[in-house]
View 1 (cartoon, rainbow, N blue to C red):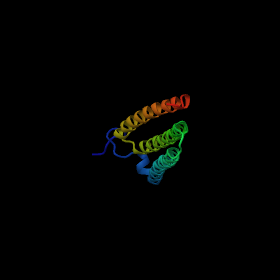
View 2 (view 1 turned 45 degrees about the vertical axis):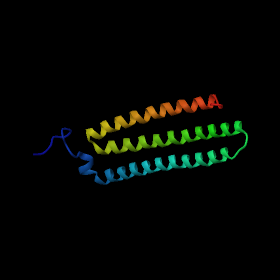
View 3 (view 1 turned 180 degrees about the vertical axis):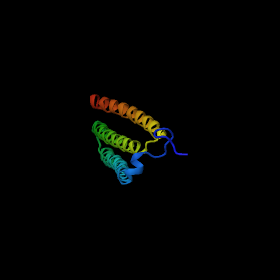
View 4 (view 1 turned 30 degrees about the horizontal axis):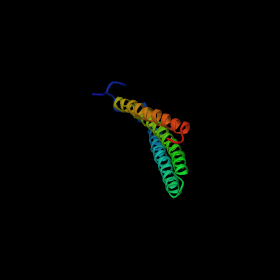
Length: 132
């Protein structure tokens, strides 16, 4: 028995007629996700380098100021990585056509948006009060 379109269908016109496009978009989503990981790793490495440099300084005030500056930069990298992850998830859900994937996407976007919001708020607080 054949599924009706949109009701329990396991594949749509994209998957039947445009398999090459679906495959290309899945690769794009995977590459964007890998770039997101790379952005976060670069931010982590830069943070650790700045942190070690700050710890080697003698004056406590300079150390706290430098570490806070590095925290702000790390937060920016994390936010950028999260945004790239959302792009990857949107591409994946768009070609998946499965309701479960759309619900999963909605949950992921909500969680990542909440993380982004609170991280952005913390970055703003650090900028306003560098002694924090």
